[in-house]
Length: 392
Image (tube, rainbow, N blue to C red; front, top):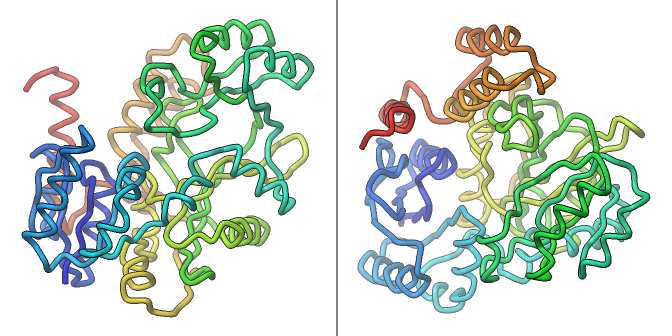
C-alpha cells in the first residue's frame, strides 16, 4: 500500500516524503513540474507530473494516476487550494483512496476567519480586536480602535475571481487615514480584508493531530525569524515546552469544529495584557513541519499511524531547544536587513553575526539540508543560486 503526496515542491512536501519513507511507508509524490524538491529525495517511490490548474485537468489527471496505480490507498494534500478542489470530488475519490484531511465543511473553519473567531469567542478563547468590513462604510468602526493595526484576508476563497487580483498581503497601518486610503483600493470590488489591532509580542505555533475526537500528538514552537521581517513567514523556529493554556485552547477549538487530522494554530502573547491570543488555524501541514521531526516527533508519520492505520496513542515527547532553519528564507531575511535604511529594529552588524553564528550552532537543524538525504538540499541551494543569477 502506498501514500500519494500532492504538492512536493516545498520543504513541506519534502518532509512528508522523508517522514513516511524513513519509517518504511511506500510514498509517491505529485507536483506540477519536474523540478519538485521532493522528487530528489531518496525516500520517494513513483513521481507524477500533476498540473494544479485548470481544475478539470488536475482532477482528470489525478483520477488517471489513481486508476493506473491501485496500490495507492492514502492521499495527503498540502495546499489549502488543492484541498478545497479535492473536497469537491471527495465522494468519488474515496472510492480509490482514504483522504487524510478534513472535509470542506470542517476546513471552512480554518479558511474563514469569521467562522474561526465566532467559535473562539463562544469558547472564551482570546482573539485580537477585529473588525470585519462587509461594505466600505464599515471602515468607520476602525476610527477609535488602538493603532497600529493590520489588514489581512477575511477568508481564503480560492474560487473568488478577485482573490488573486487584489492585494491581500498582511499590511501595517499606524493611523486611520492610512488605513482608509488602503481600503479604498477594495471599494470597487466590494470585497475587503479584515482590520485587526496589532498585538506586539512573541508569536508561537501549536501543532496538533486530532483523531476520533481527541488529540494524539501535540507540539509547540516559537517563531524566531520571519521573512519579510514584518508580517512574514517563519524561517527560523525553536521547539519550546507546551503551554497548558494554549494546549487547552487548541484542543477545545478543534473538538468544537470536529477536526480530524493535522492542524497548526498560531497565537501571539499580547504585551499589553500578557494574554495569548488566537491568530489563525492552518488546516494542513505548515511551513515549519520539519521542526518537530528534528525534535523527535515526525508529524507526517504520526498522522499516517493515527488516520490511515487508525492506531490509538498519545505523545508530546520531543526535545526542547531544537531550532530549524529554512536556509533560503533566512538568507532572504538577512539580505532584507542589509538593504534596509535602518527602518528595522535589528542592526546590520547584529544580523551579520547572527546569520553566520547559526551555521555553527549544534542546536540548529535545517528544513531541507540533511545529511541522510542530501540531494534535495543541494538542489535547493542550486535553485537559490539560479534565482540570484537569473539563469536557467
